[in-house]
Amino acid sequence: MAGVIDAKFWFEEGAGHVTYDPEQTDSATFIEELADMTGFVAPVTESATHSEEESR
Image (cartoon, rainbow, N blue to C red):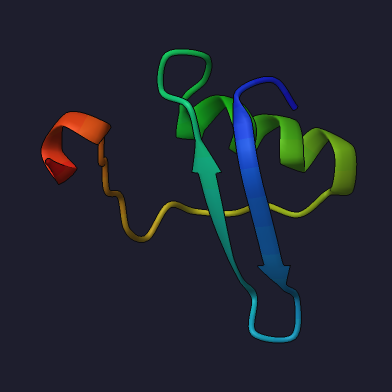
């Protein structure tokens, strides 16, 4: 999926974590693509942003 850097899903818990490049995609786009590919509908429960500039 374009812009997704890493994705981990725990289906038993009904949870997942996605790291993405906000310059290439957004949560709504990859959630829609995930639903199209798998039928799994995922709400966003927590949102965070972090850049190299913030970590300095």
